Length: 218
Image (cartoon, rainbow, N blue to C red; front, side, top):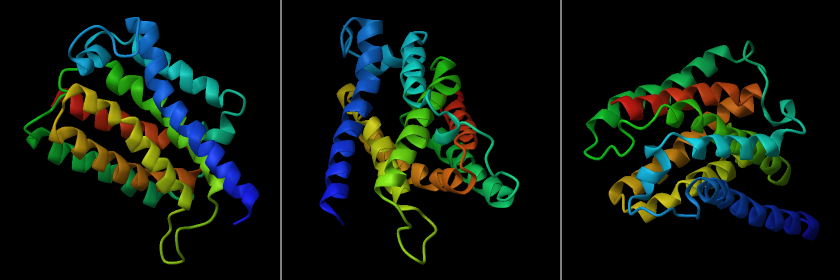
């Protein structure tokens, strides 16, 4: 690894941390007047009102990919060539969520507004499966190993997607936030293959919307 690549990695990893938390802080500041709002229940603030918060998050992500949407995965991609694997990968997180989520003792997103499944998934996927994925693909090229189909950038992107959910600790969600960090990381690794194989984030977003819909309705 050259010093130049190391420096570029460190620079962008630092920027990625800033962008992850800015994607929370900027909408929260604009909607609630400060980063954390004025109520005790932060989760209720974030999802309990109709969702200018989510709209601003979407705008934030759209601005990051606006100069090259197709390059960041806003396209149909190679669905025909990979449709069998695509269907399987799309089905796995949906089926697992439908089985597991209704059985959880704590379901903090139950009854949340429609923007949680209609707007938030696209905002998150533009940022992670779109912007971050392409940036990390250049900085962490190649596959994890010859035996595994995963590109290295999938795991780095999945780590930051899980990191995006850490503000939930401020809401005292207890064990649920640890559970959420685990399933968001491994779920992002799984659907990252969809991005890798098709070159598109749109299929991930459809899955993400359905998964969030299940979390809201059940």
